[in-house]
Image 1: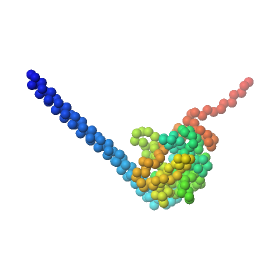
Image 2: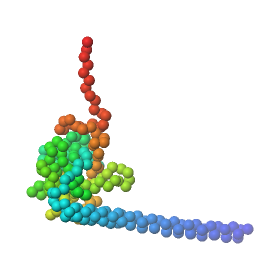
Image 3: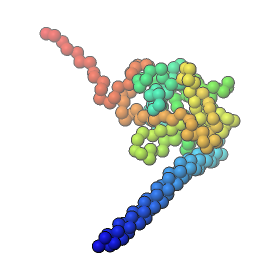
Length: 242
């Protein structure tokens, strides 16, 4: 009986060894897949960016530089989830707001689409467009939506169901090849950074959450007021005391 018990324990030990070996093999395969996933994601993003560039080039060839009319998609705000600051316009300056998580009328933008993957941002307060300047900077100072004011925002729905997140590409920069926007750490001013043709630059670029203001916020009545959620604005009621 003792020998039979020892044989059973030895059998059980071998089975456990086999199970552990299977577990290690599965773990190795999972690690391998985890290593491949980011590379696959980078390749998908690179292919997507190449497709966007090709679509823009085809549209430019078909419509020319200014023959097609832009269509307004709505009012949006661009919120940086890292700093919790919004893209704002103050005069001709465009950059990150000084206040944290305060949404003012100066952070409200008209989003226009000229062609697929060619968009523009216009400030409703100044009626000026964001774009590249002759000195190579970025300003909100143009009265028209020309090729120097063309931007690209990736409005694909989030795979996780969260808010849409996108970098901002200034398409006129880099001799028309486009550059991602960066923001000066000293004053938050918007500048051009790495070329959009660099597949790895997208992940390093600052991303913004796109907030649909028409659906969630009241239209402002003053140039610099804090925006109120829909239904939060209370109307004044005149009360006459008899």
